[in-house]
Amino acid sequence: MPSLNEDYLVLHHETSNAVQFMLSKTFVLCQRHGLEPEFCDLPIAGHVNMDRFIPNPGPFAITSKSLRLSSRECRDLPNLYWKSTLLIPAARHLAVHSISIKCLSRAFTYIYYAHMKKNLGDLEAQFFAYVQMREQRVVRSGDLVKSVLGLTQEQERKLLSRLSRGGLTARVRQGLYLVPPQLPLGGAWTPSEALALNTLLADKQGRYQICGPNAFNRYGFDEQVPVRVYAYNNKISGDRTIGAVRLTLIKVADERLGDTENVKLRDGQIEVYSSRVRTLVDAVYDWSRFNGLPRAYEWIRRELRTNRVSAAELVKSTLRFGDTGTIRRLGALLEHERVDPALVRKLERKLRPTTSLIPFVPTRLKRGTVDRRWGVVFNE
Image (cartoon, rainbow, N blue to C red; front, side):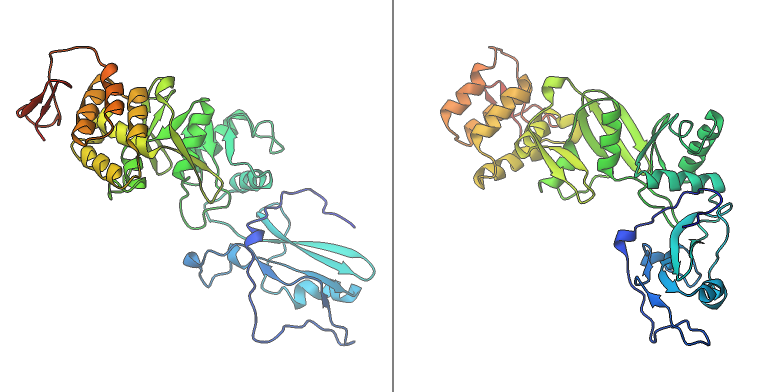
């Protein structure tokens, strides 16, 4: 089969999500000699974003057809059938789908090109065709210099910066970018929270677990949906923004990571959350950061009454991840809830004798009944 004079990248844009556009009457191409073409494949359209569907022909109206025609029909096909389409060389537009025409005497291949966003230049189009052909979601500095695109370091730097500013990619850090699996037609793209967090920590070879307000909402303790993602990790401290995802990263020691649950999302990403019992302990341990007290006490009482969390699990997690203040407060709470005295003694043995007093609710005045066993002032 003869090929094009030059090789070009072809972007397969969500062909697995194909939909069928049916006409009220079958459109048949015929010649005076009466021969009709044989359709080898049904016409299919590329990925259609119905929210952005407009009358103008664009990327949503891309089709792929295979016809078996005579030589004469092959010659006349572009004029007779594809009158409204654009069959042009690959020098100026992004290739989206191919139309393969098998003739009785010879074979031809037509490439159907569709206009992308008006501000998407030739280099940007080639970039997206390249990364989508390779199913590449992460691009690092130097990848494009070594690729078939053959960019210089300066061209690569300007291209990645321009795409990031335009909202077509997301900058994770300097020299590391996330690329969408498909072009964000008509608007900016942002990665999911899981993709952003996983990519950032994988780049640092670190571990993390989502905690605080995000875990409170996940387990139904709090109905408020946080606008940031809070995560304990062992590599990075501070706030980061990746696309539209805002992260608050809390650096902790390796031994404070653990007791987690993995959640697999529809896109294949895995989010790591603190477990239900660990979240309750963190609400007391990190009360000033997460505004956990006194509401965490009510959460713990409810979880114990409904048997969603056992007292043994709570004691085990407190001994592993709690500090002295957390052990004293939860020990006093469990004693008042009349759990197994043997479990309460495990917490007591972890403490050193002290005469100092701490408030049961740190945000209130230290006035109330004193529990000498735990050194806690009940000011609830």
